[in-house]
Image (tube, rainbow over all chains, first blue to last red; front, side, top):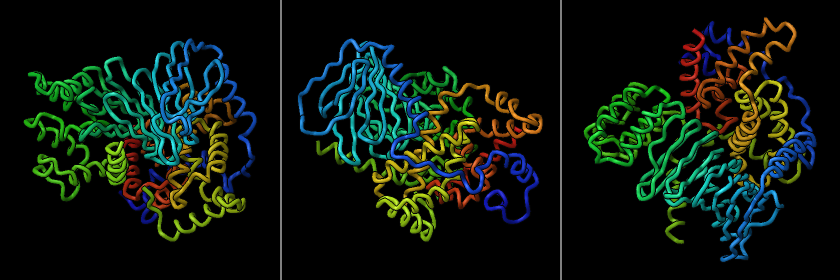
Length: 328
Length: 173
């Protein structure tokens, strides 16, 4: 990369200079306009959002809001707003939305909107650690706290928020689908992990765990092929499925290819290595033999080279919550 | 992952601690220092007419929640995450016609069409690339400044700039 793109030093790149000149009309003015700090959010926008929320709530009917107050009553709960009003959902209590949706304030770190037909409960809520369970239905989470403070357990995986907005669905069989809008989510079950960045989705299955993330721009054939690789490894068509994935993969699919380094049938992993290397060359010290052997440090180094965030914090975090789960 | 130079981190951390204890001037300095970054993060996701509202929203939210930030040196990354979330909330309401509506509702629209077209091309890139390119090409920040303000590593910023610029060149070719 030219130094000019990095720090405007060295010889100017004419094309970049032209872009800078053309785009400068959009820049923040200097100095920035005065900041209006008030104790409450700006009235107009706050009213607009509140009005939308109320209007949306009023159009829906919550036929049943079942709060089974069973355990840990003394622990703090989350504020739940439905068409019938607001209440506190204590830790351990179940919330069943039937024909209406509910919006939960996750302490002070974000919100979760639960769609009709879902079943959720709060498992834990204390400073720096908030965990809920989704056993059925769809929820939309928007979390503004630093990463690793919000967790969602499902029958087939644990979703770890890494600073983002995402949608999580669990079907009647316990399988799930996460679609990430902003930031990224870590999906984990046992030793199986998936990292899902914005614009990607991943399915999860009971007794297997999270599948390989895929871009939302991929074809249906691509996704079906991935599902075969992830959840039916003994199927005779797996090799053919892998070929389809490799053929259709573009540079945006490097996240998918990285996961396949350890998930593809062993006979096909060299082809995955080569395909990923064609988009993102393996960093120094990352070897074919090492990746083939599942060397964690090499795999992490290659992930870091994708430029989507480092794995080091994930490793520290995942260790923390795994230890916590084992203590429960 | 926080990556700012130690001196700058200390300075930011000092301002954050002061602001957490109620020093309005300290928060004003944080605003002056980070407004451009928040503006760029928002501009990568929402229309120009919404950007100023998002910036105000972001700093309002940060002001109200500053007490929750336990690691003052991580202020930049924390603020960037708020900005992305707030911009995403606004972005969900966007309709895909803002290129035309923005460009044609202003005087000398024909002079601005190219700028809007380039901005749209940047916005169409993967999020990590579009955000970094807006901060570099629109807001005029250097790679090191982007890393310092957003909490990304210099390596990630370098990769995002390199790949984003490559994709942008292809789109504009």
